[in-house]
Image (cartoon, rainbow, N blue to C red; front, side, top):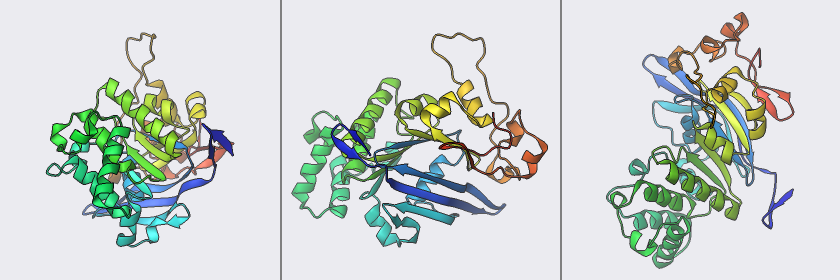
Length: 330
């Protein structure tokens, strides 16, 4: 138990993901986009999930929200939110959880927001679904949330359509909607990808500020290691739908154990350090149906051995709270 700005912060897990598997049944055969992923996040903490495009980051989050569409299906595991297994709930029961106990900020607000409905109507709809309030109270709450996320003239913006807002303001409106019912768990799926650097910094600071105010648990998905280093308490590195490494942010950056994690960190440009050529990871991420039998990183790994091709390395604790799936760690 520790104290943060006068708020008692418990180390109890808000979300627990156990042996999660999500499979897509294609004409070419089934493949697992998420393969036996397990992790948990404590109250008020942030877990950063990082990896290249196609590694399974977003599919993991959509699985938690139960937003996987055919031909995809969650084929194994548990997702326990505040002691309740979400995978055992009916769709009607899940609808009371989404937007209420848990919420998600999507990657691109122009596709997530309905273009023919005003911003205010869309936030009102969420509040009215989950809270026993009058339409007028919902409107007041919506305007309050727009103000909280830093949108100027919130009373006017309440009546605007998404196309009338800038990219940064649309993302703020998305955050306002996600937080309108005070969820205990928030998923942020690359919420700053399409924004310029200045707006990115403002959005990240906004999420952190609101997290502290609400003592909220956050799962933050990104491919940007710089963002992860700034906002996350712990980091989960994914590759080929599997977990490669998990540890505290400080430990991951100072003492990476998996060759993929080490390569990602090494490939970052360093401020004030000029090089003629940036370090790269040779090869490309294999397609899901082309993943090797053993370690998914084997074809790009300089430390690979014969056992890596045929056997999947177990995800084991090599140091206290530091887990790695590798037969030959760094």
